[in-house]
Structure formats: structure tokens, C-alpha cells
Length: 524
Ligand code: ACM
Image (cartoon, rainbow, N blue to C red):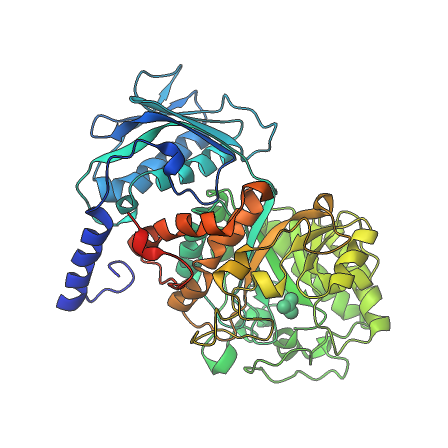
């Protein structure tokens, strides 16, 4: 409300005051760390029955001289400031302080870069990890064990208490992603940054941007400028569209990186390419540019796979994109190429895989790419066809699990959902939560799975409120599937924890779906 919409009416002021009262009034002093509602659920929590209080004497101390750790400390101070009003100092120290918040890289990375440990006593909160990514993930846990009002953007009364004890934590899967389709409808840099902030709260570590499709090309390519200026000029239903300049894309990459989130850029091909085919006549087999497209059909477009210029085009696009993208992956789409002959599709994917490799990146493709000869260091993103997933595994590739009937966030919750589609399924929260990537596809074992990814296609999603409504609260559940090992996951227990995030969603001004399956009323 306050930040997103400027003109506050009396009614919204009253609503905001009521929200603050609702979020802040009923909190009791927390003394049992094991009762806190942390999502994703940590590996282990031991409670010691006391509490730590954040106040105007609290400092954030970090061990040594690392600029990166200092920035993480400043990020934490920045998160705590609006609601507490505290200007917490971030200081380097040589050894453990007696009191305050202490960030240290003295942990190990035996359980991966993102593992961390929190040891909270009455006067000192120690967050240790073996790498900065682990410190960042641990900070999300600190946010979640503070009162929900910590997320409000205006100053609140304390106390700012945290129950004492120890949390040891690390993720089950190293890849926990979410895809945002910025092609069907375009979302600008500030929306993407808000999205990154919201997903980072649930320890998501990959943002896959679906940058091109029939309806829009969303990234500036300097060697093929019409892609963005013409191909990006519209969107579904004919709005204005838009695109990211390379500087804007780099700004998104940096913002994500500061939150230990890898950007995976997708250029979908050879199908889903009408925006490119409309921008450059030579990419079409008949040499004629197509019209821009603002509908929502699929499967009607294809790059001309038999022309040399097509591969020059792909090489240029991948070269420019790879140079802007520090992460290891370029996603090449490859789905629903119904207008590409199978005898053309296979050599096309094989060639594109070589092009991507020549620019130092690994490919991810939708599971359809398993029809080609994919390299063992390529990844197939399972969305629909279990045979495709098995075929990828048979070639030594790993799978990213995005089953459309579980993890497609554009699928409606139920028949009453106003936006979204239901071609795969209606997906209520229990269904989105109740599945296991390690057993989901017979023949695909845990060691064949890189991780999970939720996907938000945006044919019907036009603004940030719609994004939030479809993503929340299903994404926290998918994030937990990726982070928390399956023996620790249980829907009945999870929904109680999720209920307690209702006030956090409200404090963060997230327009979430209040599923009847969740006991929201029981929130503290
Ligand atoms: C897809 O949903 N076409 C990957």
C-alpha cells in the first residue's frame, strides 16, 4: 500500500493502521525457538528457552575485512531499519564480540555454499557460514524469527525479541528456482527487483527470465537491434510491451547477485519465436517478416533451421547474452516447436548446444530437448512429458523439476481464481506442496535431479498484484520442497507455519491468495 500506491485516502490510512494493529498487537515474548514458523523448514532447531533483544545498543559485527561480508551486514541493517528505526552500525572485528549480532565465515561448506548456523544466546546472535551465500540465507532466517512487524515499512514499537537456541541448516537441492515470463506481458526493472526481494525471503537461488516468445523480445541485442525495438514493442492484448536495455539487464543481474540469486536468461527457440521473425525477415524461410502477435496460441512459429543466417543470429544473441550473464546457464527453450519438422529440430538443438558451449555456458532446455543428442552437462527442465525426462536422464543429463500440474504458478488455485489458466490443473496449496522431486517421475532418481523450479507464465498476468497473487503462497511451498529434505516435510504441519506468514505477507504488502486450506486465523 504505502510504497506501491501513492495517493493515500483516509480509508487506506485507516486500513493501514488496522493492519499494523493486527500485525503488532498480539506478539508475546518468544522463548521457544523450535516453535518459530520458518519457511523453508530448517534442518535442525534446538531451543534454549530465553530470548535475545535487538535494541539501540545492538551492533552488527563481522569478522575480518571482507567487503562482501560487510555488504551482507549492511543488507541486514537495511532490512531491520525501517520497522525498528535503529541505525545499526556494521563494524569489522578481529574476534567474537560479547554482545550483538556477529557474522563470521568460520563455518564450513561441507553441506554446500548455502549452509549456515545460527547460535542465539541472551546477548549474542552468531551467524556463521562457510561462504557469503550461507550468511545471506541465514539472514532470511533471522528475519523470519523476528516479529512479523519487522517487515513493515514504517517505524514500530518494539520489543524486537528472538528466542534463543541453535539452528543448523542447509539445502537439499542446490537449484531452487522460479521462472518469470516477461515476454507475454512485460515487467519493468522495479517489478523484477521487488520479485527478487520477495523470492529471496524464501531462499530461492535462481531467477529464470523468459526473455523472448511469440509476443515479445525483451532484451536489447546490439548486433540485432530490431529484436527489442520492434519485437519488444507490444505484448499480449496489444499493450505497449517493453524491453530491458543491456544496462538494465545488468542492473537486474547485479541486484540478484547481491541476494545470491543466479539469473538464467531464456531465449526460446526454434519455436516461440514470432517476435524475432517479425523483426528480421531473413530469419523466415520465405524471407518475409511476420506480423507482431498479441494472442496466446502456441506452436505456430519457427526459426528457419536450414539457413546459415539463423545460426549467425543465435551466435550473436548468445554471445551478447553470455557476456552479460555471470551465471553458468543459458536457457534455450526448445518447447512446443510444433512448426519445426522433427528432422530439423534435432540438428538445430544439437547445433545450438554447441554455440552455447562455445560461449562458455551450459544449456538448460524444456524437456522436449531430450529428442536431440544432449550433453551430460546440459539440463532438461521437466514440465509435461515424463518420457522426455527419462530420455534426458538416459543421456546423462540432470533434470530441473517444474511439473506443470504442481509447479506452474499461472495455474488457477480453483474455479474462482480471477486470473491465470487451468490447462494443466487447478493447483491448490496442498497439491503444490505435496510432491517430491526425488520420486515424482518413475525412473528419475534424486541423483538425477538438479533441483526444482516454479514457473509463472504471464498470458493473463498483467501487473505486480496479479504476480503476487499467483506466486503467494504457493512459492514458499515449492521453496520448501527444494530446501527441506522430504522426511521433514508434512502438509499438515507446514500449513500451520504458512498461516503464520500471513502477517508477514501483509507487512510486505504482498497481495496473496488466502486459501481456505490454511488456518490463517491462528496467526500470532
Ligand atoms: C511450456 O510450458 N511450454 C514449457
